[in-house]
Length: 335
Ligand SMILES: Cc1cc2nc3c(=O)[nH]c(=O)nc-3n(C[C@H](O)[C@H](O)[C@H](O)COP(=O)(O)O)c2cc1C
Image 1 (cartoon, rainbow, N blue to C red):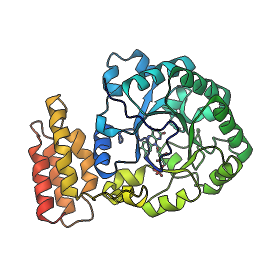
Image 2 (image 1 turned 135 degrees about the vertical axis):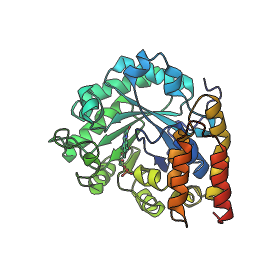
Image 3 (image 1 turned 180 degrees about the horizontal axis):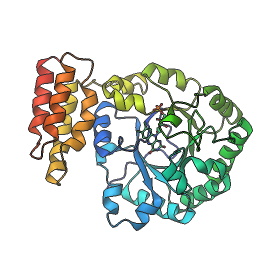
Image 4 (image 1 turned 30 degrees about the horizontal axis):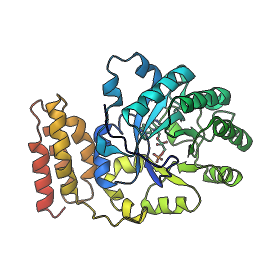
């Protein structure tokens, strides 16, 4: 159990957040990102409320490191009671916020009646939010799409947001494209439906009192700065995962902090104690190294260094000496 909760301002308005991404934003990636930005909000991968209820290994599902604050747990589900229970667990565990996933279009999630298909059931979503609000005292936010299938006009979107807002949602993160639940797979649903920022802007203009963040296709810090002229926050997913080092100036450029930027070698050195602890708890180095691969790009010999890291980290005996060597090689190369 995390003992000291990081107290954020109740309706904290994070200017930049790193999107929840299954198989990407696990705690190892989040610890890596925390070396790069101290201020941005981090999200867990989606955790299904049902799984939390029935799991014998709840601690593993909820686990995060103290340095990850501020951190939001993303929950999936459509059962108000189970979500309320999960929200309470998340608050007790020390999370700063809870986010409800109303954007995932995967067939598996759809067959469980949650994720993006809930955009078609605003009353259920409202009931989930209401119940979660009653069960905890941390912000409840909603991540959703512009619409699904044929339910994607501006009036429908506004009514959906109104339902959530009346139920008590504290912030909205809008992935600025619709999802087709039949016919497109999740990856296609992140590329084929066009981005329609102007529709999110219209929503913000019609509901200026709501905290509305934009998500989808934001690729650089300058994109974020432009986004923040119109919206209350920018959420970035793939561009952060694929190019983590590109975001090292976030705290100074977006949050106005006078931070020293860490070099690649220093970032890796800072991760070594976490890696050591992970190995002592029977974890594998590869679970950490796979995220570090993307840190090693746009420098001489990047391909060779990545290949070496990948091959060595996947052996059974892999230990932190591999990371120490990589950090040294990078330092010697002025990185
Ligand atoms: C590999 C992957 C996994 C994702 N998993 C989730 C998820 O668990 N929950 C969620 O709300 N969105 C998920 N998303 C969607 C992202 O959070 C984000 O909305 C989407 O990638 C658009 O933002 P981007 O253009 O900045 O990447 C995932 C995206 C990717 C690429």
